Amino acid sequence: MKVLYFAWLRQRIGIGEEAVDPPAEVTTPRALVDWLVAKGGGYEKAFADTSAIKVAINQEFADYDAPIAKGDEVAFFPPVTGG
Image 1 (spheres, rainbow, N blue to C red):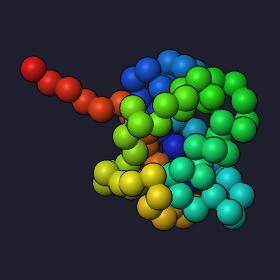
Image 2: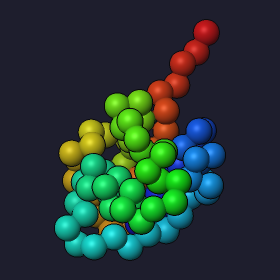
Image 3: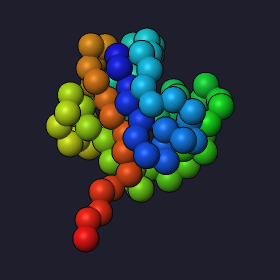
Image 4: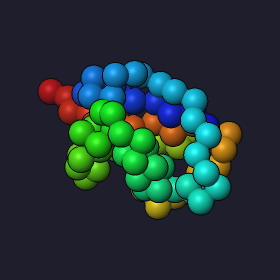
């Protein structure tokens, strides 16, 4: 699974993307976040408030309870504002 981090998430975690192999029970973005936070490092700080973070699965906006699979690309990013 490829995981992408954008904007301040990338800064807090320290990387823009990574390939991960979560356990079989990680089947949603919510479970993926919990698994990443348990790894330690900057994940806990980055995902402290998931209400401020959008998620996309295979480049489509998704809900934190949407299904994910091993070959998916999951991206996390703050909401985009324009002016």
